[in-house]
Amino acid sequence: PTTTVYRCGPLIDLCRGPHVRNTGKIKALKVTKNSSTYWEGNSEAESLQRVYGVSFPDNKLMKEWKVFQEEAAKRDHRKIGLQQELFFFHEWSAGSCFWLPKGAIIFNTLQTWIQSEYHKRGFQEVITPNMYNTKLWETSGHLPHYAENMFSFDVEKEKYAMKPMNCPGHCLLFAHRPRSWRELPLRLADFGVLHRNELSGALSGLTRVRRFQQDDAHIFCTTEQIVEEIRGALDFLKTVYSVLGFNYELELSTRPEKFLGEIAVWDDAENRLKQALDEFGAPWELNPGDGAFYGPKIDITIKDALRRSFQCATIQLDFQLPIRFGLSYNAPDGTEQRPVIIHRAVLGSLERMMGILTENFAGKWPFWLSPRQVMVVPVMPMFNDYAKEVQQKLHNSHIVIDTDLDSGTTLNKKVRNAQLAQYNFIFVVGEKEQAGGTVNVRTRDNVVHGEFTIEGITEKLVRLRDTKSNTDILEE
Image 1 (cartoon, rainbow, N blue to C red):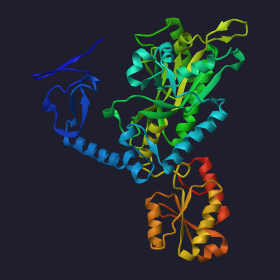
Image 2: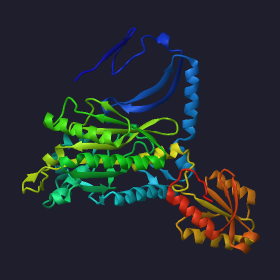
Image 3: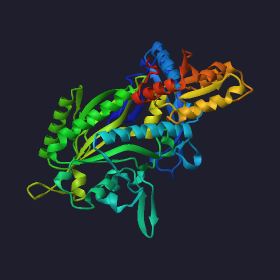
Image 4: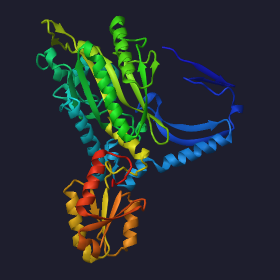
């Protein structure tokens, strides 16, 4: 193990650094927050206060930073989540999100979308247990390094734990019967609930939780199939991130100093990943020595509307789990061969991605993801029944649609309330619309589209939803 020591006047600090050469370089300073923490992460030890701050070499940079922070605060997913009644947290289940009906609509839309992509790409969805005997993680090798991050308990004198990842369970699934080379590549996907015992001080809305789900998948394949499967994984993430409007950067992380396996196997795997990246055609960079101990990986970083970077997707090669679990398949020549595992996720944690998307769209959800797609507003109570009729017809086409039948609120106020609540479209209905079987359409940005038949607007909205456009433009 190595570390670095920095000195600034009388202060000697054992840290990663670097330090400012001298305090004269600091022209502007802002204390941002404080939080409690435990010495050496031991919850039994005395609670300490951690103070956060930021400094700048001039005032102009601090002013720019403040503007950025103000915009970020407006977009804070925790604030928007409460305002739009998407989700909340409770101290009695810290780090575990309560999804309210509107939030569940977005969550389920994302999951259903990924499932449709699985269907196109030959993945098979599986459902695996939430808790296992800790012998599973002893076998996988996770337990010595990960025990503190697992929720464990005794069951009939045996130690059990909630699963923090899916891969060991998928190894049991692969190994439960003999496998043939004809079954490979075997692509198994799992939205199973995962639990990780994060310290309470580290919890942060949806971006750091204890209970979460991933669009997690493991591909069991031969060495010769690695390039094609990695290309497929890269195409998957390109498709998803293009729809979400994210740019992304790719890095190939290679063999670290401490690794398991033979160098020749590592070199071959890294060359195959390089080949897949080159054939994919997007720019990528080399990140030497930052691979996982069990295999090289491709790190994918996305940037949101505020140009903040997040790592959500992952593509990792794993030679070690197949060895530790004794996995094998029957090859064409009759011999038993060892498969390779590719760990991959695109959205990563759905909770974390929900937090990122909430802030990226600033709560202004595109129609296909929106939990409030249409609000129907009758001009007078006598048209309430027609408003309900319109609602039912669009509901039958799986459009998320509500009606505002509050007789104590003016028409203009109802329209404004719907716009502030971020309904994508507002349908105003009155005598003319009821007589003609139509609705008068406007948007949350007060763009008036005019009159459409119920059938005509339904067709346009279904098309808008299914194309997954991030702009709410109705096609002519």
